[in-house]
Amino acid sequence: MTEHKPRILIAPNKFSGSLTAGEVCAALANGLRRGGVPAGSITELPLADGGAGSVQAAIAAGFFAQPVTVTKASGQMVRSEFAFDGYTAVVEMDNSCGATLRQGARQQPLRSGSHGIGQLIRAALQVGARRIVVALGDSAGTDGAMGMLSALGLHFSDAHGQRLHGSGGELHRIARITGRPDPRLANVELVAATDVRNPLTGPAGAAHQFGPHTGADPAMIRQLESGLVNLVRVMDRQSHWQLPGWMAPAQAAGQPRAGSAGGLGFGCLVLGARATSGAQYFMDLLDFKGHATHCDLVITGEECLDAQTLAGSLPGLIAANAAHTEVVAVGARSALDEFTATQAGFSKVFTLAELTGENPRSEARPTAQLLEQLGRQLAQQVLARVPAGG
Image (cartoon, rainbow, N blue to C red):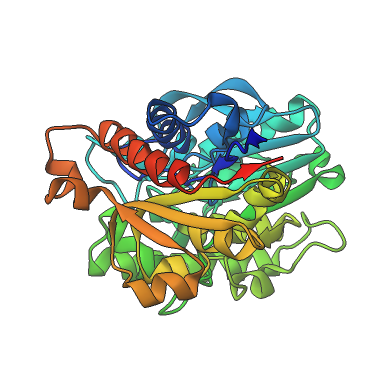
């Protein structure tokens, strides 16, 4: 008789504001090993949902990091990177012109643009990518992808012929579009990965729903909304730059996901992109099912486990895709009661708040240390029920 070694897959999202998905994996794995689980029984698979950390998740899965200098939302240059495996490139909003690069700086909702993500796409084209996955995380502004489209070859100008740089505050001035998108886009599969399902304009659109998060006050939101409407109108009327089969701007503006990342979803759609669930796409891209097939336990999680977990967030999809494998969820905090967690497919939910009795972010011990402590507890539970096998 030989002892059966438990096979554990750690497949979390990031813990927003504290740890990347890779760091969450490492902390839990350290705890499991220190609790007695053999190192060879643990597989780490950092995942992403199309937001921050998407590039790092791809790199952790074997993609190569490609460094690029790009323009961030404020117009300053910043060192960024994308992930590439020789065929597929993963670029993300967050490490080019996203909200996290704005931290510590004054919010400028009318001056922020999306040039950086366009520059990353162009860099991916340069190295020969045949598929480009655009991870649409939190935006620092709302420019309807004007900056991205400018970086990819379109030229926007006002009624006097003055060239516009590309920012939310310029949207209402657009009167003419010249130029054409990079011709290499015609031979590339473009994928817009996001779990935000808002259209570009209207009460549920980018300006009204996400403008406040970028620092826009009510007057700015009205200006951004009218600017987005103008952008769509001009782009639809002057559509000489579009290739056959690409979605008409007026149609794209009303599509789910068009309003994601300050309207970057709209920009991707008019360039022929396929919009899809970010969490599901990265699970498929990084072969979650293949990794989970022969496991006894899957550990997933993210910063907060709540109603969004049941509405298509990464941990909920992990539970739905794990077939008959047991799934436990880990979060800094949770709003799920035991019945709801069971309905979602989790055998158990563990929170860091339970370890401290406080908000982990205000606790002196860092999140990683608490996750390691939780990993040791999980190891004891796993080993306690390991059967003997032949």
